[in-house]
Length: 138
Image (cartoon, rainbow, N blue to C red; front, side, top):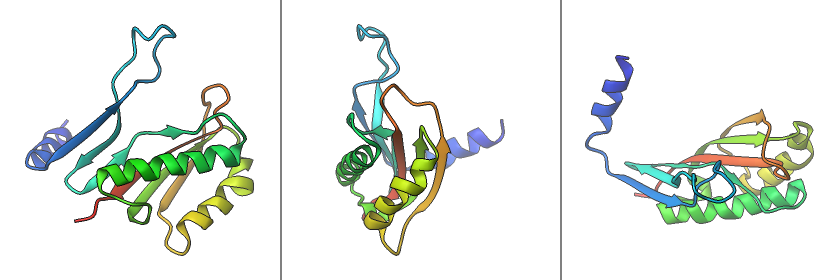
């Protein structure tokens, strides 16, 4: 309980930018769709929401996610080379070694962000979901 008020006080003077997109996890008729931010920017730190790719195989989904995240980061004033932390959710853990790692190394090269990979039950036909924390350009 003591932690939360300290965080609120620390963030009180930081500029916050929120970009909303259509919600997820709602009912099929769209009546209970929550507002979900594509990203939040607090000071110079950019937090993206989890992004999934269009239908297709795992490599196609990973590349589509990276394209979407790159566009989101650019809108927030950041870039792929300013990503400091990534969280990757995979439906099937062996996809990490077979597909994710080669594409990851191609995109991030010698200076990759910290990364956590978690096996998770994802939506039907979705094999990968990724979110980033990045620093915006000054």
